[in-house]
Image (cartoon, rainbow, N blue to C red; front, top):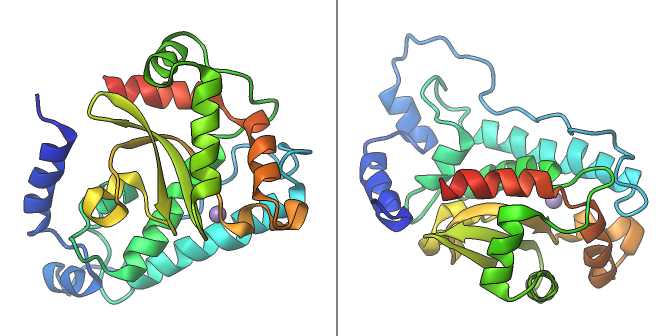
Length: 243
Ligand code: MN
């Protein structure tokens, strides 16, 4: 069985020949190719802006999705503006194959686009509670209990200085709690993100995610956020990652 680490290494080798920077894209695509529409687009929220009230307020959701996430998408597309875009891989593949010293525009905006696209789905109206069945067992096995998991995840979210994310990941057969700075994602791997694995659940702890309603009180935001977690989505990702 190929471990994720080996898979990343293999991917890195193949990526050496793959266009991942604007200049390489320009060099490897035919000049005659037509320029298609922007390759990355802002996904709709899977629910109304007010669906997560009162835990996440409507104004925050609107600005967070329509302005912050949109800016990541626009700037990611701009990073590829210099050449035809027909050979760009999906965002997940792109981020999984970043070179050790990535183009910051692609790292930051690509990470922002990918992380937020997941984040919206990791929440839902009337969410919260606890996971069931296989994921519940796995969380108990890895952390002792759901309460212990929640405490550790909350610590990771509160302990991230400045902007970033807390994550529950599936990494080489194990559930792990990690955090990343800025818009780094565990799928970028150890060298770039300081952790690796498939993100199952993520929490945005940038101030833009909570400042309107919670001001500087990140702990209140994190406590409220547990009420909107979409455990069905997290479980789906867990089962898929586990294979
Ligand atoms: Mn955000």
